[in-house]
Image (cartoon, rainbow, N blue to C red):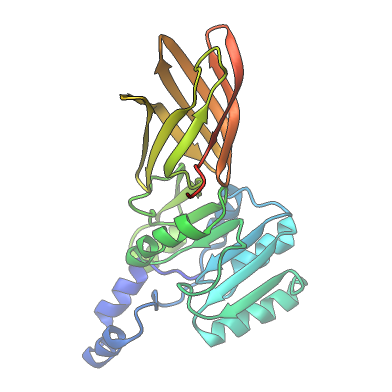
Length: 286
């Protein structure tokens, strides 16, 4: 994993004019100079992502490959490193052979903005802020619901993290001028934006309701339409494939929990002593 943060800025500021011009004219996806990520941070990133044997771990800007190699060796996961610099790809492949995990990991020489990442269940990155935010729409659109992401030092703005971890790493100070480190953890939510037909137990609603959801990286909101009436959902949250919300409807304060699977949602609804199943489906195209 590449140390692509303040070090990149410092390197550019210290560069002679000719080199600075070369960097300015270089391809827009070069995210900064390579410096290995400290091992303590590698450990904490893998721990925060809760890497397991069944995972496929992608490291975008994989450098010498230490993160995916460690994920494979320690947890039995499979891994893919994506790196633009050919010499680092070869270094990573040599490291995988040396550690006995070459059958579980691969390293791709290529553009991390173009590489297919849809098979990932975990994504790791340590990139400059403008590259991190540039990846947000792609993560939200292409990764499976429930995929975990850990970003080192820079958040996936404007997407709020599900967890944050702050730590002191003295060996970073000589590179970035500070030993303070932050890790940002995200779980990719199911894509729920659009119109749904919401069906409740007949004791709660005699006919289907219309559920309208809007979903952005920094907010999700919804309302239910019953004829000409519009009722806002309360505390709507979507985390991975899980969805929760509340609704006050005809005197009943209802609590919904459920699972999203493509164009269907199913779960349980509770209202005082009442309990039953609910479903929601996207209307078929006409």
